[in-house]
Image 1 (cartoon, rainbow, N blue to C red):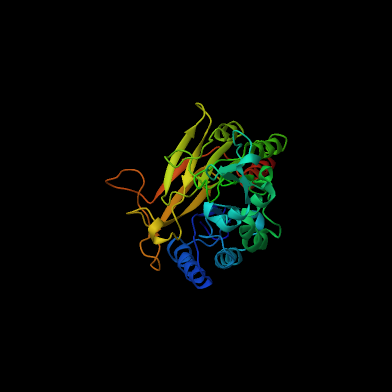
Image 2 (image 1 turned 90 degrees about the vertical axis):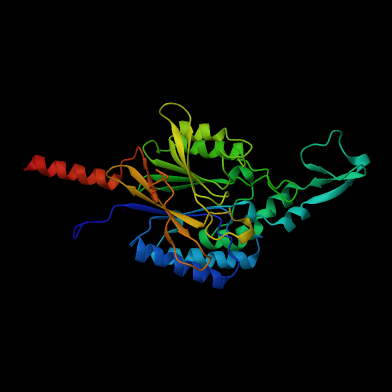
Length: 358
């Protein structure tokens, strides 16, 4: 890049499964991350920060205090507006104790037969009945001690409101944040899915909005193509036909590059981030700590996904060569996108006008 030329690359920092415990740990993690971005990758600007769930481990106030320390440090250093920070909850961001409190015991004579979905059988004597209002408060610690501090508003308790749009008109990029944990609790720990009403509500806003030529990116926590896949993946079709090209998630603690193909011309590249700070017994054997840096070239429409690794908790980040030829792997891969950056288009139009005048 020559002197005076504006850096138009769009950089998206993708973190997932942070699992922070203390503020001191958060400070160390930020220093290690900043060292990698500034010293190794020469990143002077970030345009977006995406965190695809599992910010905490047990969803406690102290854990979110630590997480906010990390996120706030990144936001302050790179001057990010909250509209450029995309955060969705993971299964570790709902509080088990609050989930338990949402159920009350009901004796057998008072139960419907058969039991409806809001009940958990407790044997022949009775069952536990879910109170919806209390049940929706499972994310209260995530909301009060983390989300609210970033966005200055609570995380929506109603499921149909948990598909959140993050439009950025200057870049013509639209993020959609989804909650894949809305049905998970202490009893149903693997019941991951996306609420259909939430998706429908967001898609309606997109259909009647002016987003046709925008780059659309969806973010959630759980996988959609592995053994741990969500129960309902039909929403991927809705995303594909409405022009979404990229999806980002975490949960599996391993960086992956996958494809959902709807038809010959439409589908999503699914970018999975590894764990930024997993608890030791949750980490995938042989897989280091990881994060992704996505770099979009507005002139070519090429999105480069750079994967970074850290072998030890308090070690240094370095290139994570795992893509392409296994005998000669690369630390990055490229995704061609249908995207025209507004600033570039405007400059080209201005240049064309000047040529005509001359």
